[in-house]
Length: 282
Ligand code: BG6
Image (cartoon, rainbow, N blue to C red; front, side):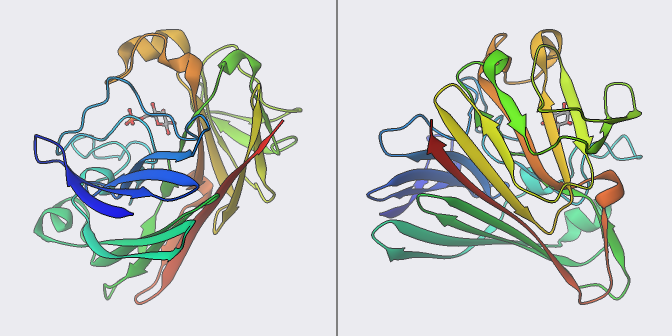
């Protein structure tokens, strides 16, 4: 079942339900804010106090950071770009089989985006909702001139207890510590007992988030950078749309093209950032 729905305030989203999976994706930001396998804890974390309001990013799910990741040198422009707060166009949905749905959403430049970022573009999100989640974000340069993008599929994963989580696949990888702006090298698995905000570079293999009862696998394509973020206690108090203890049950592992991994696209060129996400019980 694929249904177009609206919240009482008019906020539009698409609900997908099939024999294995449930998902919800908002037209604002092409933002997948729910993805769960039937009978299991949701794979994506969603803040209990998140807003579903136009012009505000949903706290949780997979916000799309584009055409820049993080802050812009021009501080009047929004952090993580404008794609996550723009209304996307619904292009198509298909029930491929009893367990699989495929959706396409699109965004193109308009008067408002050209004021913030002076390039013509087409951005397409292809989502496959099944036992595994596949997300492809394709950027096409529709301008005469080249442009540079940094971007992220800013995925919030739900975890049972952040103190018990390990992230595998980043051993010996260089990273930029966004808390100190120092360049460091990872030793061993990533564990959490304080605020972590890092941009790992030169990442090639799969990342495994190991939680108390399951492992979540993240396979990325078109990307060699991964952002790992947990705001921990103090920053969570300052975050919008997050309860004080929310840091305990979430972890962002973001398939990215961030910092040194930003991409330049010439006129008519395309680049696709892809994440494949699936779980295995422990
Ligand atoms: C992460 C950044 O990707 O996003 C963090 O590394 C930032 O520094 C976080 O705090 C959340 O950003 P926002 O704009 O959604 O509050």
